[in-house]
Structure formats: structure tokens, C-alpha cells
Length: 139
Image 1 (tube, helix red, strand yellow):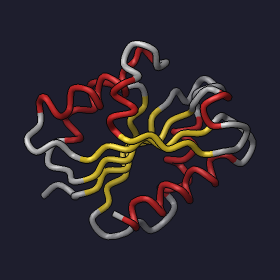
Image 2 (cartoon, helix red, strand yellow; image 1 turned 45 degrees about the vertical axis):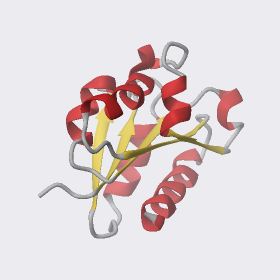
Image 3 (cartoon, one colour; image 1 turned 180 degrees about the vertical axis):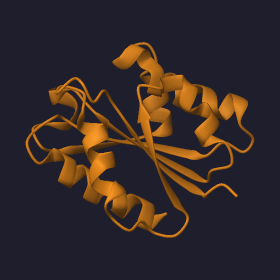
Image 4 (cartoon, helix red, strand yellow; image 1 turned 135 degrees about the vertical axis):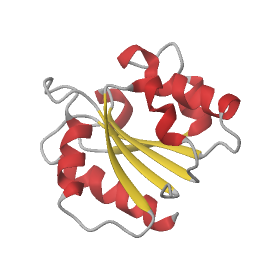
């Protein structure tokens, strides 16, 4: 049975400008997660993550954002519609934005999608991990 909530951390472990998601994944991997939450390493999968959205009620994506999006050390939350509207101008080849745009067209029912992001900064992974846990606890 698929967990109703997926927490998917995205990014490139080999690029310090884009390794925030994988660092959050590593941090959360060592913690007990609430029942019904599955933690996934989304790496650079982008649109290929569609498979992991199927059957979910809520999907929380975690990724690094440009400095202007999250501010130094600040967390920025996008809902699925905001993320989908970025298709074509979001980094990483627009993978996550296209994922959010296509999910309602392909999945029935489509999950609620949220993107939590922050600018890469020292300690940002702890702030982002806390925000992600708060979001999945709230449901």
C-alpha cells in the first residue's frame, strides 16, 4: 500500500548550489517520520517523479531555490498551482514545474502538491527539514 504522503527531496548531490534537497533527505533519513509518510530521494528525476505521485493525498517536494526566491536561509512555500505556473522558467529544465502542471492531467485523483525551497546556505537543511516535517504533520 502506498503511503498517503510523500516527502520527495530533489537536487544534485554533486553540485553545492543544488545539493540542499539531498542534504534534507539525509537529515530526515535519520529521524522518525510520522505514520503514513514516505521519504524519497528524488535526485534529478523531475517529470519522472510522476510514478511516485500516484495514489498520494499530499506530495511535499523539497528543493534548492535561487537566492531571490527564498532569501538567505529563508524558506519559501509554493502550492501546486504556483509551481505549475513556473513551467518554462524554473531551473533544472523545469522538471518540477512540469510535474506539478501535468499531475492533474494524468492522475485521478491528483495529489495536493507543495514545494518547499530555500536558498543554499549554511544550516538551511535543518530549517527546511523542520518546515517539511511541520507540513506533513499538518497534513
